Length: 247
Ligand code: NDP
Image 1: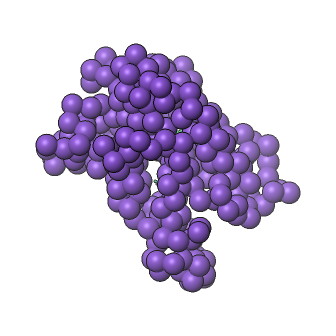
Image 2 (image 1 turned 135 degrees about the vertical axis):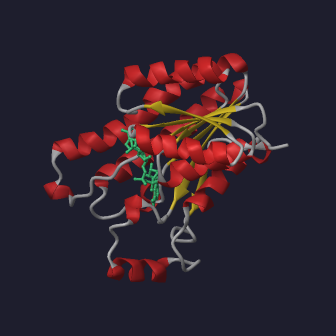
């Protein structure tokens, strides 16, 4: 029997990359997984893969920047899957630009998805968890929030905001048996990092203690740990999954 048997999990940004790996990993632990993102066709692929492996999953089309739709989706998940116990805020975008050239829209778009999106989904989800007196919230931040990166002031600010929110919520929700943690991945092989040049990859490998880029499964393992019994007494932390890029 898996660690999350009988639990319901909602994973945002589950249509590809880290979110898809997290959704599959939680389903392997027995959770019924609500997979949310904007692209319906890609979400259906995630759902099909989980079902083919014997797991339970449903697709929910959601733009996390849309607060009304986020509330609706959380209510639908609760109704259709019979609860909501684990929330993984993974949906995220980058719009890199050196700061002096960054347009206000580039700043706002990243904030709207990477930070407001977390608020939009977490608020209705945490209300349900509070009533159920159990919950696990895992926010996918980034080591960029901890170490900075030129060209990513918007992203670093949003991901650091997520960490502050994680710590505050951990204090608010602990008495209801809800833990709130962040995972800070380093460089993970997904579409988001596909545009790294060979030169950038070489420099990156030199900076890593474990000389390889991470995989989406590396991140999924950390999330499964925090959502499972191993995470019962862990809250308000940032788990750095970066191969030693940030030490
Ligand atoms: P991808 O670009 O491969 O996937 C991003 C996911 O987020 C997709 O499923 C996408 O689905 C979804 N998404 C984007 N915008 C929205 C939105 N407005 N509403 C709902 N879903 C949305 O990225 P990764 O898998 O690499 O990244 C996942 C998370 O991990 C992100 O938060 C990212 O910042 C973080 N991270 C990634 C690292 C990396 O090296 N890859 C390193 C550190 C952190 P769709 O387009 O269908 O909406």
